[in-house]
Length: 210
Image 1 (cartoon, helix red, strand yellow):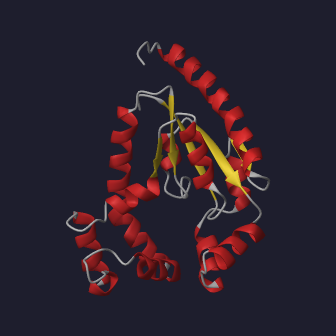
Image 2 (cartoon, one colour; image 1 turned 90 degrees about the vertical axis):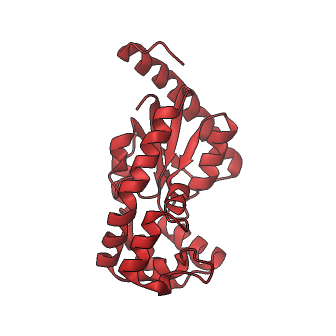
């Protein structure tokens, strides 16, 4: 990787999108791995054909797009199916992420990935920041805000690393339980820290470009 990279992760509905938007507002390039996962299964791409062959045509919508809601129901009900889907998509996602990281010219960039640890993509980053909220707040957001069935919510939470594991593997933690302004202040402090770390890393490696 050509640039200092920070991995941004957190439990589902923890506020990763809010935090990544605040980093973007500071001029930091951010790649959302979920957007990459959508891109690799667009109609006409090899991954979608493999998924339809493995899981059947019922996982496709009438317009040929992947029925993400149906796919989500399948993989969170069957761990084996989730592993099959990951086998098809993860190598392609990882290849695209590597290309993007190598192309960055900013002092540092961010890889946003809800399953950073589970997918092994923490190996692609120099430092990890975890956006954290209590699980009760995650459940409330998913059920009340997003209208997701409580049974599916529990399966979604179970499919991710535990809150304790994420916190134990974090280099930095953003406690996203206060106001938007408080979260933004946490982001600003980390931004300054990452700029300093990126400069030091470039000096240590002898890099002079950028």
